[in-house]
Image (tube, rainbow, N blue to C red; front, side, top):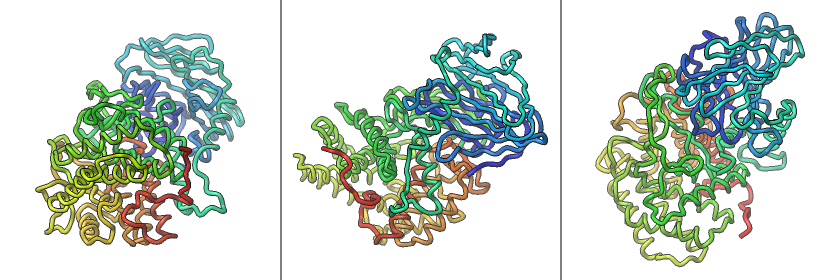
Length: 626
């Protein structure tokens, strides 16, 4: 998979889907097709940025290397790795920029160095470099100073050293230089970040070790395996897995929702959010995806991270999202000095949704716990005590209103999906306790589970629509209703489930694959695109309802909208296919993985029972020693 682009103005905004992403398991950088690194928070994803041209092409800062003449570019990853190549074709020759960050703790080279290797592969190419660091989202005063072997940029609390053999000049707040390469000549540019200025590095070894690490990591389908991911979408699944790994923090095991902030859901609008945090609601589907891909270590680290977060005296204080280090203070602020991507303001850092009441998170946590327990991962007494506390808490609060999975800012409601996930928390809690022979108030839990079910069936289903709705006393359709059979609330052959699928297809689906979250007032102005994850939910519902060929056709159509690098944002514009929202989006890629799983499963098996969340590839043997 590769991307070919004819370049335009050097400081024009690149389409969101045109970016490649690299990272070191602590932070990520986005590389535009013109060779410009337009986004780079450091030292962690949730840290302030050094480069943020993607959020303000004039004031955000960038690190660009590219030809001085008219060009075409092609981007591709080196095999199944997160090492990115950008190849420039000019009238005089061809040159390739190879960008990478060594994975933290996995190679002998320091993780705080961003490597850029420039090689001429044909003819001769004249190139230019521009480095404009803008520390702290462009708020810090930066000084530039020439030093032996490069230029030092000091931003008060942070600094970077650009190391290269190329002659450089300081032009105001920019570092510039021009150089020429002939065939087989190479120039290296090392951006040494705070803590790595004096570290010993071997660029060639760093590249070799980084390639070796990524090439040896991830899902492989052996020829003799009956692999549900094998087939025309196999490469998309592997790339999605590599994205999830990039968004995984090496130290904590947390997985960020995306590496970016404030990429708009509506160009020029206000729906711009910071997604550089971990949402607990991702837990169940993420664990399922990782375990079915065979990435047991990552699934385990992620599982243990959020179980540790639940080790609190009161389940009420469990937040919907946390920083990648488990921090709770995610105060939302607006950076008024940044223009926003293509004029989309405000630019936000932090996310006030961390303080919302979202009752669905308890069910999603129990889905993940159940998935791991069925894999053989035990729960010690302290862990079980916290899980039991959560289920007991759900018994007390399930009938209260909340902000729900979509984090609406227009006031709490009795949201159907939240009620169903409270049902899931009780359902999975009962099953875990039964299988593990734990002492719990079975009678109370079962009675509450049945009350929730009866309440949802009475108040969450609209007889006239023939479908489940978003919240009580409304007739608003919501794509989350597609998950009711997936989590076992009702079987797929229930007429209410099939009616809901039909109603959503008629009311929320356009051009077969674009699925809106819902239609209706949510307290915010403007529009939004179709949600990739919701498209995957719809495909899954079709596949598990027996409409396999229909689901397969739509899935393959959806894959055509992924970027040529195999990356996808949170949303797609139904009119243009352009990507919207933060990019690449973890939940979108989880959706791709799980849709491939379900399609692969139903292709060779009878349709599953009422709990397809339990589908596993191959032999569901115990993978943990209790």
